[in-house]
Image (tube, rainbow, N blue to C red):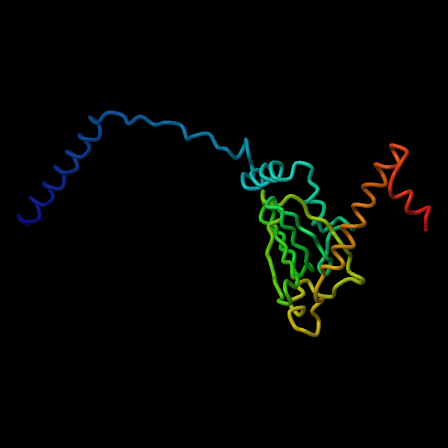
Length: 194
């Protein structure tokens, strides 16, 4: 019994000491939590993506060109012409459209010197000057990704003739509207001769 007594006393002493320490300790300063940005900006990633789209596509023409809700949007199977700042255009059949907001990209396939060439083009890239639909697909593609066009049986071949005809037609339309506004135009003379 004597062994249990000192142990009991020691325990009381410890408790007393610890309570005396807590009563003498100074109060800790507490600060309120920082203000939440949720109230100001509930969805920061969506807001940031919208800001980037406003910078990269101010007229939202590219957004409309690849929107799912737009009936006149570019679709898989269309022939697209992409103009770059370097001056080299690339035209090809659209095989895939990857819609990822600012990272939206298209996969184009064409033949250059009889070799099938594919190129991923970021739609909102600053190096892309413009994207035009040269020719619509005759009928809607039944696949979302036209990877079967890599096989020789389904390959469209060289598209240079179609693209050249489109560019020629665009230049004639541009000249005829300018020529008609001035009253004289070379295209009007050619039409009367035929």
